[in-house]
Amino acid sequence: MLTMINRWIRALYDWVLSLAAHRRASWGLFGVSFAESSFFPIPPDVMLIPMVLAKRHRWMFYAGLCTIASIMGAFVGYWIGAQLFESVGKPILAFYGKEDSFEAVRAWYNTWGGWGVLFAAVTPFPYKVLTIFSGATGLDLVTFTVVSVVGRGLRFFLVSWLLYKIGEPIREFIERRLGLMFTIALALLVGGFVAVRYVF
Image (cartoon, rainbow, N blue to C red; front, top):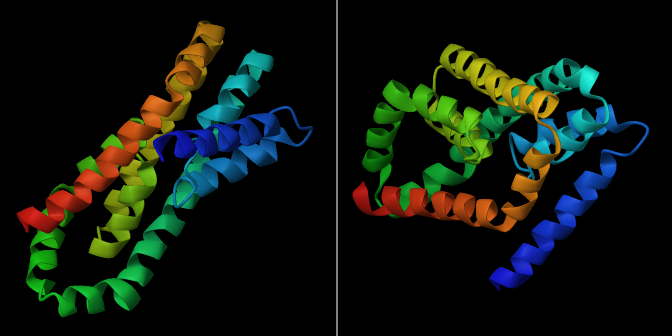
């Protein structure tokens, strides 16, 4: 099963990578960055890396494009979390008698959730998980916006700057560890749901 998932991820990775060579690659980069913040499994780094390596003098433009698109996509993820929780999440919690448990999680997240969003925005942790969860818990939009701008900006500008300075070894590092990074991200996602289920 894991082998099949890895093949699917590799095929998707190769497809996204092929977009980087297209004459409208900037639009592709914008689209992937936008979608990755709410539902798409492949990070925009897959396109960002070859595009910066091909035109290093445009590293700031590509980083800015990724940042803007990702923040726009984050608001879509927030909206998905808010809408799906109202229509699907609440009835499920009510069925299992867990409404109070979610309120406890909501109270904690509304206090500390900004740090979680910042963590996900900067690291390889699936950013979409926390954009959606932020909407579900009603995290303050100002906090959500600020940490998204800071986190995503830091992430993409740092990657682009490193590519500008170092180059090819960064691409090799990511490609060699693609399967491992996906597995870790999946484990973190499942682990989060398990923790919520048993802790609360």
